[in-house]
Length: 309
Image 1 (tube, rainbow, N blue to C red):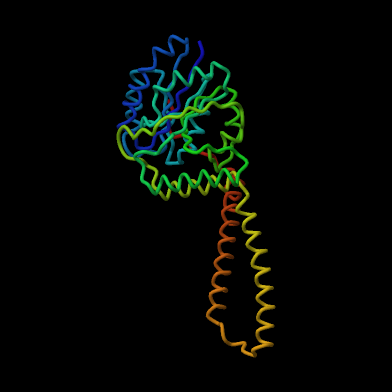
Image 2: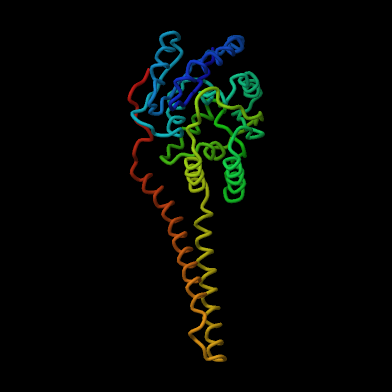
């Protein structure tokens, strides 16, 4: 029989751990009919609640339930990578514990894999229930990425994705420290089928993704899969060099004609302030790329496991 690995990253999800298991088990009959066994891998990303204890209770009931528990919070990207490394299945699927990734879609997704697709991914057709500001900036981010990156990153894409073993191995071959999995999926290629569904609110608890965490995550994605900001910094430099040259000519002509080199100092201060701001912006862009390079060359592990079942 073939094996399907269900990978569930968790951070403070004690309420959702058993609830997710019960909902997943509703699809068990389908997979038995397909002669596919299940293994469920909960990846505890340094939770502060009783997530680990809830997973252990499930493990006592069902030996197919496994646990990878980190020594601290390393982030969802690290949890996804750890789950994929732990997975032994012929297929693997990533799902959130909060049931925003409905298990009821699994039979349809598995059907497309049987048709020959290497992965079956999901995307939301709306963002109902999300704050308006977050939705607005999320759409702007995906629109920006389509313009500045050669890697396909689909608007509304979820981490909920069913993958073949070959696809999983390709993702694992990218062992970079600074991970942006939505970009990695697009970079490795292969044939992907997209399934659309309406946004589903969390079953229990509150989201761990604040606006600022999402903003930082978007910066990580831009730096990881585009060098356009570096080109933008160069364009700014060229533009202001040309502008400065034209202003010098203008000042020389005005002084020769009107003989008044003193007037206009407020505008000069504004120009200097603006150019100084642009310079700091460009240094910040360079700093982002340099910091990512710094973290990569350290060769630190992506995560550290404290406990494993």
